[in-house]
Image (cartoon, rainbow, N blue to C red; front, side, top):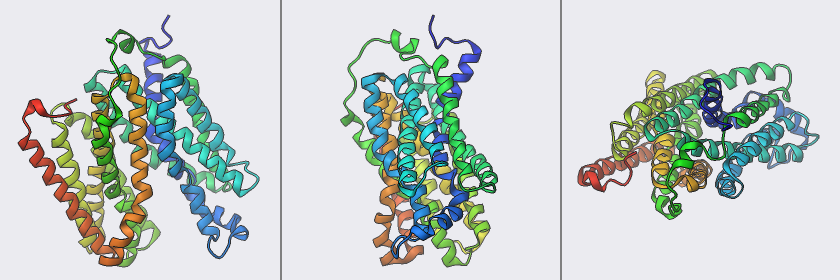
Length: 400
């Protein structure tokens, strides 16, 4: 009997597993965000003139991101060697154990090591679950579910922050227990996920498409990611410069961005069957571009929140659009490796963002940086529109 039959209970379990990637990725950093002041105080005596307690706490939160840049492509490649199911089970178990290990780490080095391992587990879950969506579901439903993955990731971020804040009242180590949710994903994977779903077994064999065939999309992901992180990385400094530096105000702006991203992710599943890749790319870039420009020039908090939501709205299209396009190009055998590269490129953009913006901020100031980045993004949107108009329908590279 197929371990992943279509019984309703197994279908629900399968969807929980395959839609969990976005929420678990958000948890990597957000689960300990409310604990950062306590972590900083705990490690303050181990700090130096260069790396004080606050810097150590920030390092604990962000050290997993570079791991995801490398880990997602690595586990995507590994899944082609050992099988996607084994890679998913190992990633879920690693996520749970490494994440919870932070609650018991005896020193800073062990804590950092556990966070690096956590990032590796999250990378594997994101890469393999998205690839499995292409194995189990036809393109139209697959694209809708990819949008739901991002939508649930945004909603999960809000829930995690509330739960983490409550647990942080107990102590800074308590929120690390949230990562044990990886054990649930591990347990549900066992009965609900097959190594080769029936649709894949029945499909005609084909040679995996060369990863070189998605190089353009991977480059696009990095470039969009540089813009995507403007509100979250540069936004707090801009708000401070405008006189809106209160933590509650900054949190409200972050919430507006998240709600916008959730809206965009949800609408993707409705729009994708009706619009081509370049049409949605145009909407994505225009929303992010106008939102970024408006964020930079707006002088009241309501307008800033609206433009932050517009930035988020555009960014909500990014992951589902590019991942859907990649799954349309590569074969199921290459899907995990290709999606792993895509996930890595998102976090590569996050990693490169501060370096890419440093010179622009020095030359144009923080408001000028928002203006120039936004205008460049609008220019990219106009190029996407010209591409859509100029290309004949049969020549479009990704329809989905």
